[in-house]
Image (cartoon, rainbow, N blue to C red):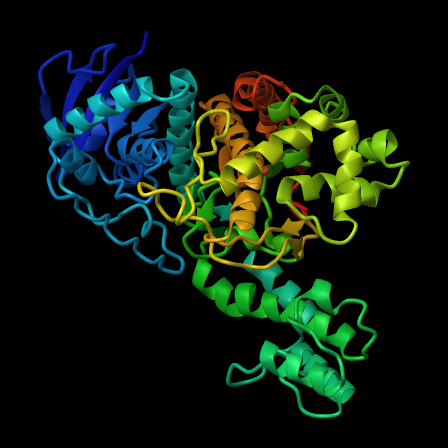
Amino acid sequence: MSERWAVAAEGDGALLVPLGPDGLPAGPVVAEPGLAEAVRSRPQVGRWVWRSTAEIYPRLLAAGVRVERCYDIEDAEQLLLGHEGRLGEPRSAAAAFARLHHAPVPPDPPQRAAEPGSQSSLFEPQPVAVPLAALLEVYADQQRRHDAAEHPARMRLLTAAESAGMLVAAEMNRSGLPWRADVHREVLHELLGERYAGGGEPRRLAELADEVSAAFGRRVRPDLPADVVKAFAQAGIRVKSTRRWELEGLGHPAVEPLIRYKKLYRIWTAHGWSWLQDWVRDGRFRPEYLPGGTVSGRWTTNGGGALQIPKVIRRAVVADDGWKLVVADADQMEPRVLAAISRDPGLMEVAGHEGDLYSVLSDRAFSGDRDHAKIALLGAIYGQTSGDGLKNLAALRRRFPQAVAYVDDAARAGEEGRLVRTWLGRTSPRAAGAGEDEEAGIPQEGEEPGPSADGEFTPGYASTNARARGRFTRNFVVQGSAADWALLMLAALRQALAGLRAELVFFQHDEVIVHCPAEEADHVTKGVRAARGVGGGVGGLCVGGGRVPPALGVRVGPGRVAGVGA
């Protein structure tokens, strides 16, 4: 059995101690003058226990030291606080130690804003001095709290997966995503035209702005929603917003150029020339990943907008000479995960097909109407009940009662202010007003769910509205379980790549990209498929024993992968 050691950084050096099976010290504390050499010289250690991966691991990577597994104390604290209904309390090791001793609890240090093009601003936060002895106390207490969880084994698996995700994030931040600045510039010129001196709108945006103004018969600023809404009102058309799904079908001549303007304007402001200058260095884009950045477990980034890059801009993702990009994405992940966690036999049979899930679903319950099948299933997950939503949901409930009941029960729990968990134990925050020991955390009031830019549904939530809380928890049990499955798959893939030159370079919810030498592409592809199998096996526990992992498509690019992540 591999050993487990705890380590605390002390300046350039480190304090270390071996741990026994009970998590308690099993030997004397050892002082080492160098952190990297201390870890490198102990290859027998299978898991390192430390305060923060974000603090320690980048230093090890910079010295060429890779670790197999870790236990991130502060990451575990956040998961445990959530499981105990206390999400929002400070999660630092210093705060956990203070709670143990009934001392004043220090707030978490503010997250530093990412610096454009930086490789280390996320992974070099201001360290909080916590002695090794205090870390060991917190770790021992966390082991007791894991044992007290509703399902201890599942909670331990979730903690291990989250800690693995922190390792992956640090490694991806260091590797960076291959990015061709020249290709990016070509795309921008193709889409936006020439740039004008002084930083004004590029030519194509200026032309579209003129078209919008001409359609309204007066000068209108299409980049100002209030001005557009006012222009429509003066034309006798009442709109609440300038979202595409609300504008489409209005029949006004300004709609078509306005929608095109909005799409190009987002590219210009979010991923235009300034973004390229700020975030791409030495042929690499290095976003700063935040594993578990949302309460559902989905990742976010601290700057760079890596998870919202338009498909057309991704043409700049190009492998190095002699290397390839292996891209894997899970098709229709959340509907398949719903089938597994609900254990609905009919939906599990549908989700077991490798092809388009909605087409199979439409043949089973919607007379071949794929659009209605998709609306019904996503409506059940996101809580949309307007328009044809109720009729479609009723048809879905008749055919797949267990699946609909599962998300209905989660919604009811949210409305009543009860805790809602994924299969592994990731816990949704309570909404404000649900109980005296709760923590706020539900996103603030929004709109009814509606189609987002990628054609899926965007849920709206209100922390003080019971129905909106229900929509949140309805989606949480599915999206959170999907995030858990993806973490397990990611951890398995990382292990499969150990010893290769291949590097994980991108992860987004249901998509992963590996950059590898051409001769390793076949091995990496097999590793991806094997990781999918582990995600379905171990992930069978993750998603409730249903063992219906998302269908995982794998593509290997000879160099450029056009539309990566489409």
